[in-house]
Image 1: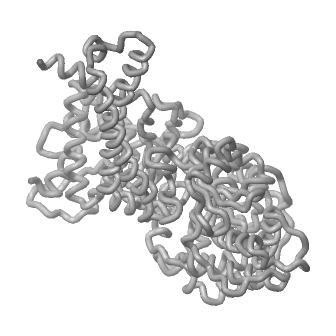
Image 2: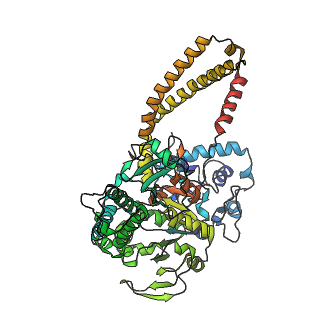
Image 3: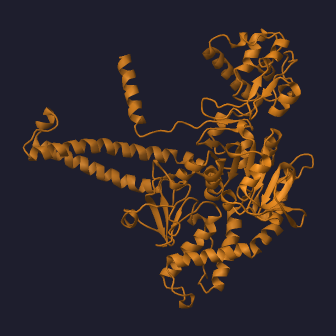
Length: 628
């Protein structure tokens, strides 16, 4: 094994090996990733230290100070073979190489397959020596960033962030529990019976859909077919689900009926509503409240919860003791600092008001920033009271926040370092002279943050879903259970195939026609019947084993609803379909960017199709025949 210093020496332009090969080591990695500034790494071996380093952690500093590289500008950028902009890519200045006696043309000679293989092996070795996880290993972890649409971070000029459940994560039991308490108190004042009810966050998960007409909570697959359902707080049987929703699809465009639980903020609302459905069903709701159906009940719950937010009691309580509600993430401010130092414009766009935003951001950020920096120093523009999703759809007046107490004055254009209230996304674009897919917006709400910024402005998007970490670990722990379940299902499929063939043979024999094959036609009638009876019993016993195992699949994540991203054993949930449709990348928390660098090129993975297994089988079959 080589030492870190020995590996580092291979990435220097001046070393004991031929200079042309040294240049090739860098050039063949151009456009893939930017190496750290190795010149600042302590020497841990006896090898002579490099006298020239062609590496840097900041594209702007490289291009302007060392003049080793040039940075592709917006006016000179092109698109690569994946259709992504090359803006922000580094380019080798050949005249710089020639000044050191390096022939740029010579470095391009030789089979690229051999050069690339050697380069990749040395890059992996160097990452290990430096103790830096590769993006590929990070992807296979609960803290990975997962890509649904290829995204070149180097081409992103500005990154906008939501605040609540994005830049800061609340303790769900604490935050949503208090929201629930205020909601219940308001319902009590409205005449609803709420005694004996308590907040139960396990009752619901993100991505479920409220059926306001039936008082049900449902989980749908990617096509909109309902797979699980709950009426009030009682789970419905598979048969009941089929009888109620067998001819219906969940259609989120019908907002009068369906309400999608987009975010963790929806938890308290859904828990309160489903509990009140029980009270409505058992006749506990007094007549003085008025005649109510399930849809009217939902409106009452939403009104009670809305009052809890508008009256300010909830946020005042949180501001007085933020440590009880916010789960700190020391890595998060550092991830944003990396992005800012890489030349990205950082934006904070939140629906929260200025006083709440300032208090919570100070608590969550300031203590983790270096050199007495404050949270305001990270952001080029701060927008509070943004009124999303309208912020992305229409234009509203914009006001500049001019004092620490939140006093404002009208303005028409945002300036760097300013804090503003209201306005619109188009105002932000015009102020920065950055538009469309040069902006990445990061938020936790699929509709308010991710969907609308993409649909109306073509911004690139990232979704934050903290539950991914718990689901990832639950999937790992469920691996043996799922493998056993799949084995049973495969066994039933094989047994069922034989049963169906024998059944068809019996059917043809009854009609006086030959069976599928001569051997089947010649089978003794009693042998055929006994075989079918035995196979049928085996399948029935397998069903008795499979059914409860299938019901239990995902219970390590949530015992009622199973996994967040799945509906059934193999299919995707409606939530996952929304994520794939609107989020270019998704991850559990913003600090995960710290493990990828601001120059990462996220590539979407191959999407499997139903007939892929057929082509894979044919490929294996051809390989087997070729070797025999």
